[in-house]
Image (tube, rainbow, N blue to C red; front, side, top):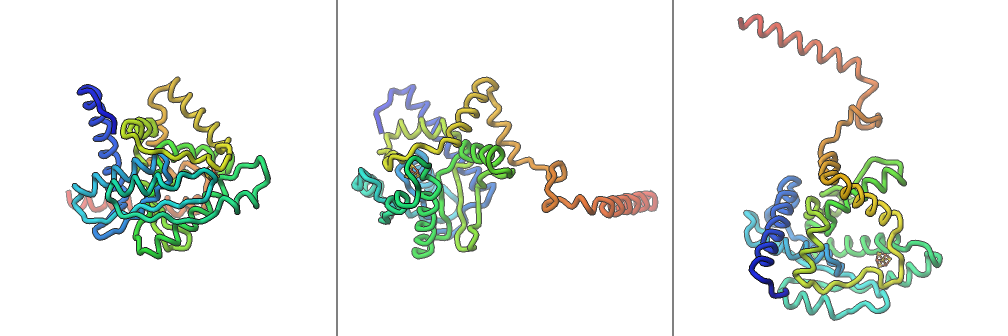
Length: 284
Ligand code: SF4
């Protein structure tokens, strides 16, 4: 980490404290980590996953429960991937780690036509390998570095392009029921994480070594959200609060709210109210 002047050091400490507090809060709110958990931290070499590992290592020392951490990186064989960077860093850090090797780059290149976005298939292949490995090493949780802005971007991506009202949950059971995924940075702002990563001088490995353009739709949404935030400060905060304040009866999904049974619900509510009134009159 770079040498900081006292004022900058104070700011850095504040930033670190905020990231720790928000991460601790998300872990508590969603009961993400329990006593005895073995948490596999997926490390891509990007700012988010480095920050996640760093913050979790800090919390591990002060947490009221005992949990183990293991860092795992998947070398997907993109040309120019600097193989030595992560092992060197993790050795210095003294955290148990594994580097897996799987040439998903060739599969992606073979399957996706030139000029099309490759990130979807690439991430699916990465997920498959990492989930399988978590099982192999007995990891009880898989921690991912997604943050608050990722969650909101996914919400709008699904809303605008996917026709569904869903984001990226802070905690998720995988479809095959084998893994529980956690996103401890779910309450943290991307801006804070980026600043923290710069000050910490993490050895960032870019994700676009494969030559893929960044997912264009996500980029458009990101810029839209940033623009809103600039023009209406606090809007991101408000939108994130909305994710935690959902009213199924005010939407239109018959799978999550029993619109067909409203009449029966009214009868039940009315009879409960009458019973309550009777009890109050008797008591008086
Ligand atoms: S940028 Fe390349 S390596 Fe990163 S997710 Fe997309 S396809 Fe995969």
